[in-house]
Length: 447
Image (tube, helix red, strand yellow):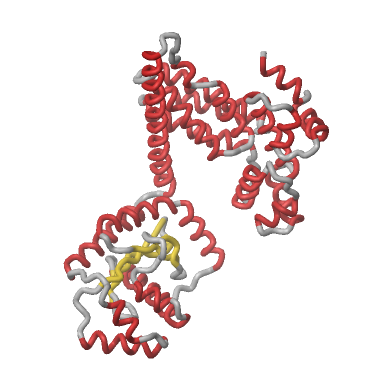
């Protein structure tokens, strides 16, 4: 068994979580290529991710692990196979406690053992009398029904020794690929791929709208389709609203939509795209300052980023650059000198952004985060500079501003939509935040 320090284990789990999507991608790719199930286990032997929903290689595994003793033996096997594969420097192929063939490849990341990829759940030959004799020992030890095990054995996949070796080699190559990558490199590749896919989807959506509009134009000579209408002002306002709230993921979704429209409108014209993205970056910086980011920090970042922008040679690099700018500006909204409880703050803000329409109180938020109201309030105020209730009010007011700008809803309805049952109290909170009443704000936005 590994001697695992709790603090180190927490750090390891954090590292694994950061590359969860990459691990998932590798598991899926391996399973599709080989047809053999694969799991990723952490340092304690617990299944972290699986290529299939049940997390078991075969029905025998499921049956054995349904018994406490069987589960313990499986964990021991996972641990020992991981140690062997580290020792040998290549995948370790072995028979598990029940005689099933498995193979393991360790995952070392940034010099630390984080877990193992384990595949198998197959046999290399049809079960003979000697194999069945060994299985009967497992029956007795775990109190399983012999007939049940024998029936399951008949349905286990038979794979040749050569194919097992080839599958183990693929697993080894896969883990080596992951091991040699830096965490930042993985994250950049992942974000780049996701961003390009979303921008591509947006461009295809715009093309479909244009085609539909042209078809409609043939039917109605008075109708027309304006490219400028593809980038409505409310989309930009939604982006800025999310930046002011420090909602990084939400802001990225809207940004990719805007980028798709910019690229479609200015296809292949890099200087025009550069100018449009620079305008967008300036607007983002202003939104960050409005969200209470430090002005000096933002001005310094603006100078640094504008210098970088002039050196960029491709449209793809421009898109990556503006996402980096967005990330930094969004982070700056609630950045603290020495933030220590990032996960708690993130979960708290996510809960509030998801539930702001409800009548939530401090106790509701603290229950969702599994912390006492006092402790959560203390951490949140210390790390963000605002209280939980102040942040909740901020989220509600930002949403109210969006509704005032983009809908015909009256003040009473908007108050209800953003979580206030009392219109007069809503107006009081709004005026305190924005300096004017909701009605005056709506009138100002019409000009």
